[in-house]
Image 1 (cartoon, rainbow, N blue to C red):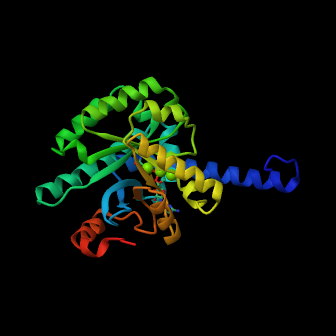
Image 2: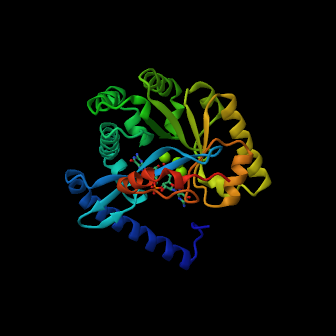
Image 3: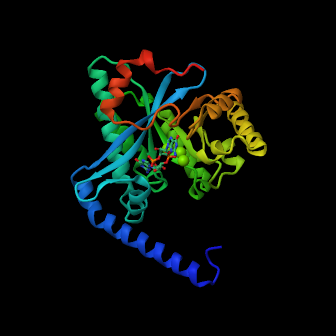
Length: 283
Ligand code: C2E
Ligand code: MG
Ligand code: MG
Ligand code: MG
């Protein structure tokens, strides 16, 4: 293990530690400017209905095109944003750009799609979260049913009473919620029973191991459970036809992954939706 006291391991450990600290400080130094210049934008990844093969909704994934650093991955800047208390600003920037896209489609008389926005737990528990979200949606004159919030399963969801109150309020306002990365966090089955999520996203690490019979049984059970609780099951990170066919066979309702589409720029999505006929996966 990494903690073994041998020369080589310690050396490698320190090297990577120093590299990651340097990288983080580099990101941090430019982060405030990135926010100020609104360098954060969403890529949209289609979610595909496994029965019909059609695109039914999207997930917005944050990207940072930094003037100083080039394109920075969210796996790098999100921890920095979290640690500096700025993650809600990134969430909001993405949210606004998604609302603008929907308003533009609405004004052009085009079909609207629901878009999922990732909300970090600290943002989700902010007392102003529900009110400011609905105010923002209204200011763009978008129907709240076209917005869904994805909350990563985290230890903070253990605060079930607060979480339930927020999810209920959102639901009453017409905004659906989704539990992201299900299975790898701190979930207990009692969450699912108490929290009125509309959707459950089965983590990619489960999908990756679908061929393992024990994992297959676990996924099958999650899908059945989500059916029984009237939740929509979504599998993340589908990369192969085998995974696609097996998830469909297990009754999973929605799929997302490179097998169908990678996250794309809004302009590319507009083009894709214009040529909808070519875009269905009906295997
Ligand atoms: P997530 O919400 O679970 O999003 C799924 C991640 O898997 C995305 O990574 C997506 O690009 C990637 N992905 C999708 N399909 C495939 C596939 O078939 N294969 C592989 N290898 N990867 C796939 P991304 O965009 O790097 O985002 C990473 C995480 O960062 C997200 O995980 C989410 O937790 C967080 N994140 C992204 N945007 C935001 C945001 O606006 N706000 C907050 N708070 N978090 C965000
Ligand atoms: Mg997500
Ligand atoms: Mg996820
Ligand atoms: Mg994930």
